[in-house]
Length: 158
DNA sequence: GCCAACGTTGGC
DNA sequence: GCCAACGTTGGC
Image 1 (cartoon, rainbow, N blue to C red):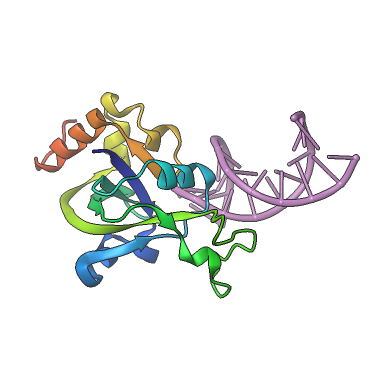
Image 2: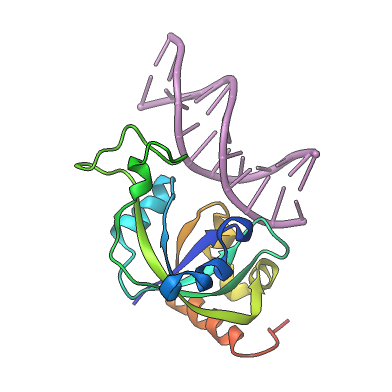
């Protein structure tokens, strides 16, 4: 089972929004970046675990966990002419953009801030650090293990 | 609000 | 297919 990090702006759609959805489940759509799309389409699997990261806020942090509860499928917003994410170059035969459904799993008592991550030598290779703008990114098993360990203790190592 | 980093577009 | 111009993301 793989781990991912999905980035979102809490003002637009944060973990608290996911938690309030029916079945605590929502479609993770409107991703319009090829690298992120490739992960979503080709590698994200039903049952994978997702770290939810809040960007554009204070402090930016991983705030909780979600679970992937669908296989990847074509993002309906690309076919919706009224959507900002409508893509005239896409077609149902050859969809360009993909999405998955995710279900709320856990909200961390102590969010893991970006500076926590940057301060940890073990996490210096995280995609979040190396490639700050990517909105869907893989998290390695060892990175995930450390992050999950931190969430189980009140205080992070300095 | 600024700006660095990065992605996308389009002329050639 | 290159690269300059432009647009967007996201930390600070």
